[in-house]
Image (tube, rainbow, N blue to C red):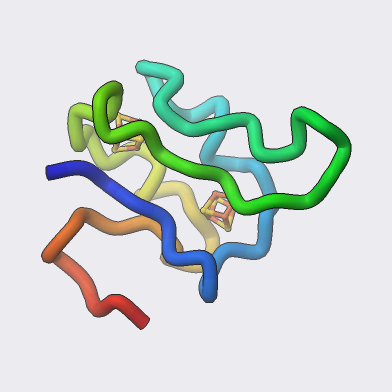
Length: 68
Ligand code: SF4
Ligand code: SF4
């Protein structure tokens, strides 16, 4: 189980990236291009910090939210 980001809801604001205590969320703008951030299932421990701060409710736990 791990949290994941629904791209349809994500506005690439970047707020979630530094919020993760395990650095599980990729720096989506590292190469100067706009891409959606991604969560590493290996690093994520489902603490929920990123989901709590996301302004568009784009982050949720697998199986715990609608896919769209
Ligand atoms: S906080 Fe939410 S909207 Fe902002 S980049 Fe992260 S997932 Fe996307
Ligand atoms: S749920 Fe917690 S550990 Fe997982 S990506 Fe979000 S902030 Fe990081």
